Length: 102
Image 1: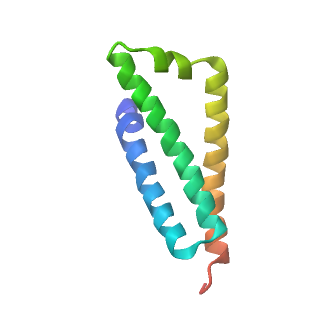
Image 2 (image 1 turned 45 degrees about the vertical axis):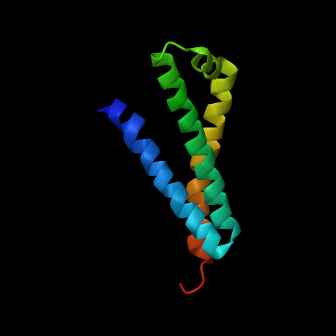
């Protein structure tokens, strides 16, 4: 069950959130929407690189897998995920609090 969630559901969820952030930013041009869009873009890119590396590992081409599973690259990826997982809800909260008409 966790493999299904992390390999299929989570990437699709963040892709949908990214599309929503892009639409929101294109309509409002606010910094909060831009923050959401950048955070989602980084999350989707990191998940996509991991998915491609996993696919290439199964195709017996482990170069990308070996590159992204070095300790320094994993540390950088984890820091990026933490920053984006904090920035995403902060951007949504910022947008919700500064929105006119509330």
